[in-house]
Image (cartoon, rainbow, N blue to C red; front, side, top):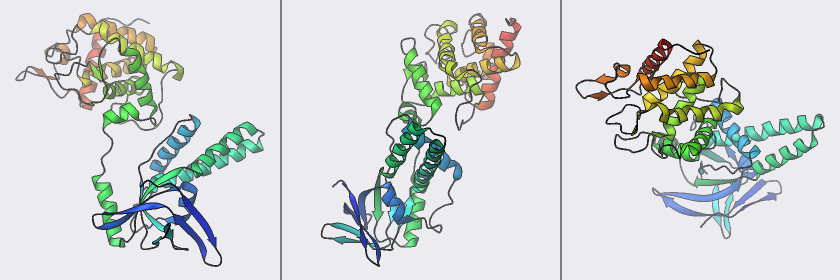
Length: 374
């Protein structure tokens, strides 16, 4: 049965009695209550046992807090998986639901960073609201107040283990964090709204769909896949294009251009592909241009041209067109000699960071030999 609500009732001299509606079931021989509480209620009745929990990561808290606030400001919903708690025997069943013994607490097992981020977001918004009120920005203050109230009323889905020992809590915490798997990169690219580069990639891909096939869900494309590239590879290209980063990028974008022009520049980068790649370029058996490392190297090449020659992105992108006559894009082309394996008659190791840098350097040298336009 789904959880519908909770209530809190004052009890004279003995504290606060929290009444909870929910349903219980057995999981691995342990009794678990499934419920839902507004965050403001939950915040008042749980604690962190440092002997069970790991140390809070401030960077992780900031990342989630910024996601929460950005979602509020953009007017979109955001979702979290159920928090996991241990009641340590403090919750008992009544005729009409469940009650948390006055003065008792729930101990968080999974959800510490999310909860801390909620609290931090509320504090952050309160500070902004006070500043807006003090400087006469009343409309902004009213809006910030609605954000604060929405966070306080946010319905937190919960699983509460009713009778675990602290040893069992430690084991559960370890199991949850050991067995947890991050979302598949394909799912992240399709649905993640936290990362600005991911959102930019989806928008760019929407403009390019009529030009060539883009794999939407897979991070790695097999040799027989008919798509020329994937959303995951496109994102890496865009990051390499603007920031020259070939490894994991964290934090907000740092465009080396006017941010308002970033999407247009990214679209122009991908539009050049059909102009310089051969027909049937997605045929990875015959051509190397369908490989992620080669595509990222092209983007990195543009980034390096803008840096070393002080070119605008428009000019640097135009220079890529010189590669049409300089590269056959076949596996055994001299441009890929550092990647080509004669025994297999194909390129290998193209996606390693060092190999991407080498491939980009080959592109860059060939362009520079042809003479750069100012």
